Length: 126
Image (cartoon, rainbow, N blue to C red; front, side, top):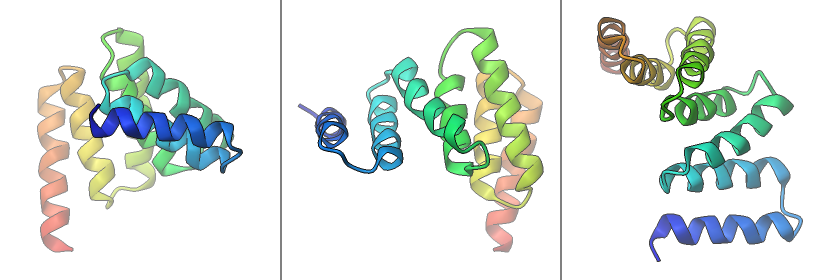
């Protein structure tokens, strides 16, 4: 059993033990993502996002899970979420790195390069 599988088991136990619902959903989503279970990760992150649409971490994680799926609608939603995050947080290197990744996953290579270059510039200035 690898670390991600163990983490998934611990998260499932925490969920049934009455642990903090948001923290458990985040943990379960992250474990599922590490295991390549992107639909499962999406489910947990979507729940977090629905409860708090302004939560940057929830929308960023949801965007990652959606970008990893092959359905064009999922990738388009990933881009949409990340572009919103980038408009709201234009100097956040993590947001720009996610934007580069989702553009890359959506085969928008020039835009991906621009977002990733901006990430490097911001990181070097900080």
